[in-house]
Image 1 (cartoon, rainbow, N blue to C red):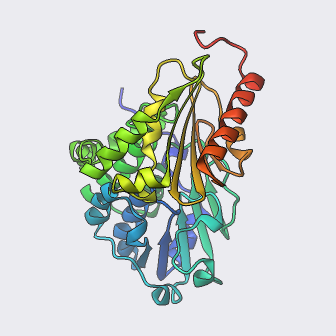
Image 2 (tube, rainbow, N blue to C red):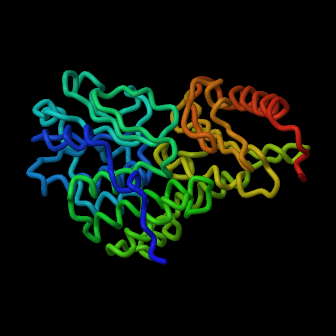
Length: 341
């Protein structure tokens, strides 16, 4: 039987569509340390909006994009707008960004002060900071939402747009291996593949194209991985010196949390990385239905139930001790089964 998606799958909110159609010069911004979902969503809008006689301006400082994601930047042909260009915009579309202060805008929020914001995001902790807000913690990714938006706006989904959005969904579902890989997201991915998404190319670029420095960083994370005595918590770390001695920087840290996460039987996986001195980024991952969102909130972070993060000021050794203690206490309060159950 042919799949027939429900109305919600295909229709973005009318108010969001009207706000975008009313724009003429529209800025596109995502979060600091942009990931594949963020870059894919910006790139797809960048290519699609001119069909509506809208001039898009990408707010994506090149120095903030990880090397391996430059593939998506080049696919879209993105060119970063200057602060002066942004001041002439009549709308800012913020994608994949839960809190306004985390918008990746050169010069800070003063650069876009007075420009109304259309906020499109899939984080459960979104603060609804836009004049128009479309947030859905049930979506796998913001790229999934942008696909729905482009369909609602009547824009073509070209092979390149399909590739960008597929990459975004693939990234945030970790290759469709996580709990957020829903029937809806799988159907959207199939639609994008049918529209010409270059699936094999995406997988090669995202998973089989490490530079020597990125491979060196992987060795650091593997070497620093630890497992708690009860087998419930796995964690790794990378100090500022270790990251930079490998030839990497803060933008190159993200997916490496999958290394401690890959250990059988863990309930919580953590990656603590000091991309900038005195600023420790903590990636939290929960397994077997365990939410880590409230754990991340203890450190003023946020994200999703199974995938969250926080930035903690301090020395990485001291921060690691605090986070690990909190993780064990959190497990004791929220998990009654044994690790083997």
